[in-house]
Image 1 (cartoon, one colour):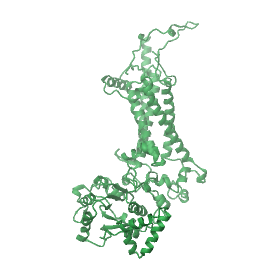
Image 2 (image 1 turned 90 degrees about the vertical axis):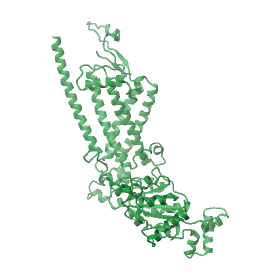
Image 3 (image 1 turned 60 degrees about the vertical axis):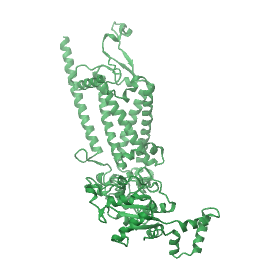
Image 4 (image 1 turned 30 degrees about the vertical axis):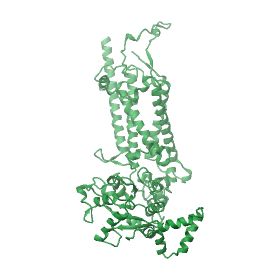
Length: 363
Length: 247
């Protein structure tokens, strides 16, 4: 770490690949892509001169589950991502340097790679009490975040914390934990939500940026379209059971053993945008629904505040008691129904009375 | 707009009123006014039917029927229910739009449910009068060719606003399945800028359904009651288009 100007070529040479093999690779790549005869030397030139993207990885209020997920990436292997694809210049959790030495890297990167480095943020800054709930290197984290964001090319908001706020921002949010895009408003921000995000999604985003030198296409919420444009439900392998109307009704019923849809058990798959049902977890081994538990919607905004993980309907707290939309609706309809019936009864009585009056009046 | 008409002699002589049958019994001539034009009536009944289908299927999507037995490939219960919901939703959207367009072309009654003359003092006075009538504080209801001011308020909020809300949130939810490249998402995806978690949009769509249930209950009750009590036709007017004054 520290030598951020290292090019792809020097990394390739460091891994024991000869210059001859390197040129063979460039020619083969140009040929297989159907490019012209000059392309091979241009590829070689690009790899020899293009510096690896410097990345500063910071940690705010978080649990490090994003890092834990990231280091388990299988495709690409995290060692390739960290050691070959990017130049991870600062990550206080896993770096060897510590103390003033470590903090000096931040200033160095800011000076040397102004407007060129990626700021990857895991966790979020608490704003209450001047940010005193998260002190990093003797200063509130929010100050460090703002300082480093100023000269960054773009910001990656890792996980539900940085993207939405997650558990520390759940009601009543005593520390006023705030997602990155509410603090930094003048930089492009890529949200990679999830608690944690899938390892391959994280390295996939990094790979895209280093390969194409630009940010991936984002959706309306600022999430990369390639991983977050569809719901868990859209690609769930249990979806045929949903369409057929076959649901698990109890955790230990026959339907649960048969692997029916978990919709009635409160699965949040139909409202959760993530790649779990396609990319899956731990190198594609499984994902929550495959293990028999519904999705809890961990990559969605405020997923801690939507009531039970085992109910389809959100708990609505504004009515004093915790009710869901159906309970409130039925109560309202019942009350109006009773009012209508009572009104009809009074109307009928009044009408009878006035008729009798008319009869009395006429006779 | 608030064309309250005074019941009584100034409605002019009616030829029918002068006719008599063989036994000398007088036919009763009653003044009628053409209120609801054909497109308004067609929209009314198509919308009513769509909303009924949408409520039933919508509830069953939120709270599905008990599990069906057999292979998944042999059943498509949720699929059919959701198809009916989406189909009825698009029919409702088309006829709601038609209804809006007709407001520009049709007579002035066709515009009544799309605005509230809140700036007019007279309007509020008559709303108050209607509330007093429903609270049994007035002996005689006023007569109106179109909606009375309270009914207009109810139609504007209960129908126009609520249904518009349901159409917008409905298409936004539909766009989740149709994909972010669909026209539904391009037109209605902004809903997710207001509620980033689509679970909230589901919740509001759900509450909107119950609001419409309440509206339908009050709407039908008021129509039946006024048909009997206010001495003018209400229900048959939505079939024939003509409002008859029975006094």
